[in-house]
Amino acid sequence: MSIMMNIADLLLRPAAFFPGRLEGDKPDLKIPLAIVLLSGIVGAVSAAYMSSVTMAMLPSDIAGLGSIIVGIAVVSAFIATIIFWVIIAAVFHGISALRGGKGDFQRTLAVAGYGTLPMVFGSIISGIIVYFSLSGATIRAVSDPLQASAAVTELMSGPSMMIAGVISLLFVLWSANIWVFGMQEARNLSGKDALISVGIPVLIYCLLIFLPYIG
Amino acid sequence: MKYRYKIPVFCILLLLCIVPATAADSSTMVEGLLGVTDVVIDPGEFMYGDSGTVKVTVTNTGTTPVAIARAKLYSSELDVEGDENYGSVGSIGPGNSLQFTFTITADAADGIYYPLFYLDLRDASSLRYRVPVKVENSGLSLSVTDRPDAFTSGKKEDVTIMVGNPRENTVNGVVITPLTNGYETTETSHFIGTLAPDQAAEATFSVTPYSETPMEFTVHYRNGMNDHEITTAVPVTFGIDRKQAETVLNNIKVTSEGDHYIITGDVTNAGLEDAKSVVVTTGSPATPVDPYRSYVIGALEPDDFASFEATFSVEPGTEEITLVTSYKDKDGNRYSDQLGIPLISVAFPDNSRPVASDELPLVWIVVVIICTAVVAGVIYYSWKKK
Picture 1 (cartoon, rainbow over the protein chains, first blue to last red):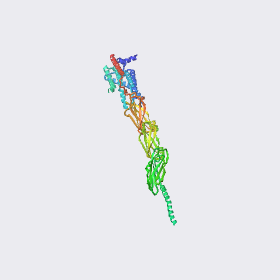
Picture 2: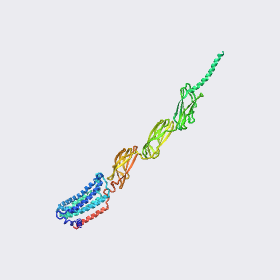
Picture 3: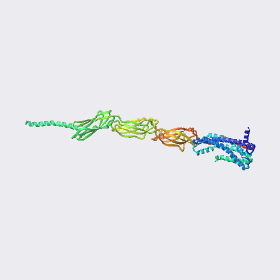
């Protein structure tokens, strides 16, 4: 019950959640790490499905390497989630330092980890959308690598994939909201500075996600 | 004196006895010096109803002319014409010959007949000579010496006809003519010409049948000046030529690429004859597309094989296409084989629903709206509760 309450506070009342959980310079990272690992698992599952779909486009002689490539994609997605956690925390920490933020990096790392939880939900919903979209569509094999690349681009630029991107963006905003409250607590920032510290990298991240659709 | 008168009288009487005897010996000698020296019968052997000529040459081997009243050819079995031309012949000088030509018509059964040549001389003597005329009604022999095991409608095949002459005389103007009843031939006729006794000649016709009607070939020939013909028929039954080329497709693979399919495989000639101009393409419901609408392999010898590659597109939901292999034989006749190829094992390029569907399901839009509302509500709530 307590865990559920804590999760509800994290998601709905982050201003009330963080005080008391970032005590000292070295806060406990087990829960943030668990959240990030959970995000990594979800990301790995999505990567496994997407890579299997991509393999279906490749010629049969290359498709024999499918299991290896899927394995690489799963491991890469999992590791990338952890690296993303560290990087986004570092970016938050750096920008907040420019805004006069005080506090250990581990505190920022904990905030970044906690804030990843809405993105887990977003990844699940996006994955469901992608799954149903591609299961109802046709996957055709392509022998030419250039055509394979074009097919992947086509795959990623479809309306359903754009919907999945919008869903992800919405939950990134939810995460950003948590990060803002968390950075205020972790780096002793004002609301404006925390918003700037979180908003800039989130804005860049959103642009990176949607540039392919805009372009 | 008495013996003086008896001696002349005796001489006169002796002379009178000698003169008639001398006159009688002179008639026999003339007849004996006139003889038949040559007989030419054309044709050498008559067929029933044939007309021909009998030429009798008479030569005077004596030293005095011989007067001839008339010449006739008598026959109770054969019709003889032309003897009225010799009602008053005249005389034949010493060392000279006269030829008497009679026309006869062989309206008689097979056999040897002996018309009588009769030469009536003015001195009340005559010359008789039997002329043997042979009547044999058997015609030329006609046979088919080569033909395909089975005919195929529209396929050109060779048929060889042999004409033999079992008669004792030479026939002329031998021509084999196809009647083209239900078939076509490259040759309109084949001229053989003279055919000596017990000789044979062959003629090969390139025939293209279109129906199972027996092919008829007629041989026209002349026996002397008489036209004759004989016809033979070659039965036509359509079937499969056991030697013809046979294309076999295997190692077939179908892969999709872009908005079309690529079908590859091997085609082998499992027949006994060359398959020429072999072309592989796709048939309905597939639509051939570039770059390989049709794949031209060329000639395939027996037991030889070649690879092919063809490209095509199909409507969504197509489960099977037709692979068409066509080839020609040495005469240019085109044959075609079709093979159904299932597409079940191949990913379908569903043009109406490409990889990433162009459709935007309403449910996703609803999900976005709900998520937007939730996130906005959560953010609003979190700031309100701050």
